[in-house]
Image (tube, rainbow, N blue to C red; front, side, top):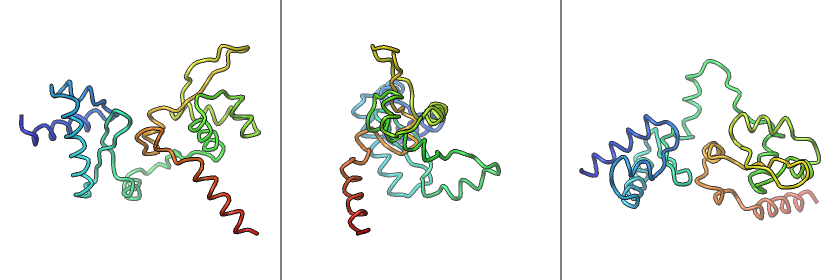
Length: 182
């Protein structure tokens, strides 16, 4: 099969599936090696970006998904007449940040860091599928431990957790802000 045809099939698979599709699944469907599939996908990503297409291919860990370009959000949002409340409150963002950087983590540990209860924020994050229960600790009360999901990576445009900004970057910026106030 020609590479052009393989690219066309991959694009159709990603479009119809909607959710992230694993490299293994794509390779199995095409009946070609994963390494070759990965190379073709990387070539497609570069082509989509070079041509500034309205769609892009996003890599999320070992999966791929078609998505619109973030810079087109303004125009795409005009399609929706209803107000879509997808934004997160500051409390939910704080809680999500703590989970992202400290996972796996319990509710009590999150509350100790934030200094306030986080039940509502956890419910919001669970409902939006940005976090999930990763299990329970083997100690008194068997507390639930939380971690982020693939949806979290997709929501924030990350390939994996290593793409999170370093906490040292935030510490330096906070020091610069504090020095500027003096």
